[in-house]
Length: 341
Image 1 (cartoon, rainbow, N blue to C red):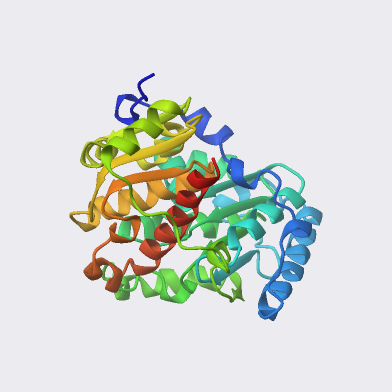
Image 2 (tube, rainbow, N blue to C red):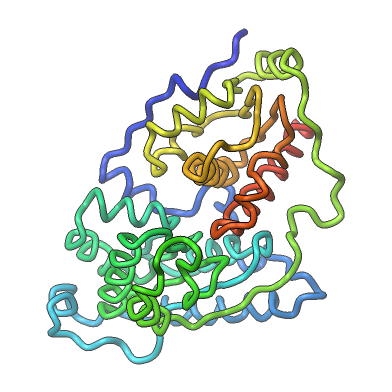
């Protein structure tokens, strides 16, 4: 049996598919507050659980403040108090688990998506239609919140303003404090008013601790040679095998909103000839790809350079440092899964 290739897949998503898909990823189907295990040495984690429970109770109890039309065009009143909860902290402290648990605890209608998925929804439906649909929800949960460019900044700050005015509760996770979003990536100073106005809508909750994905675990497996990688891929039903450069080229032609569908039902991903990403653009695509692999718990095995070499030292010192480190953490955990399987 010869392994399939990801580069042969051409995933498509309609706007309706995008709306229907706004639920926690498969890895977090069973995430609940009860299954989050706080690190006893990090009291902020136990405090975060209780704060998220309280926020879920408020979101679940809150009704809608009139129609979305009144809120959108200025006729409604913004609900009292802050409608947002913002979980800030390093990667691997369980923020996504808490966000998914919060989503599961709130009765519908509700939506959950990564920052990229939310911005893509606006692109597919248009701003007004997105506000109309999401304004009927109790909760919008946004994972991996970040402002990478001026367009996203203006779009998301306006979206959050309209939704909170309509009574929607918004919970978000990020590796960056809301007032610091965009630093080192574009001329964020030009958008400080919008960024600060948005951040005022959130209660910020810090979640500290080491990366749980690697506490007390052995080092990840090393890369293997091409022959061994090919044999592993060919022997595993549902696995894929791609040349690393070919996959990078393919990802350039697939919108990041479709990366999840690209790896749906894949048993394991094998990449041949891995090396450092040649530039920031490719690096950020690989971050988004790694996130979708992690969401779906798809094991990863590589030949060539080790996964730790995926991003250059220059990239790891730049404005996207936290994104790259999160991707390495997740890919390392997924590479351990290949040993189990």
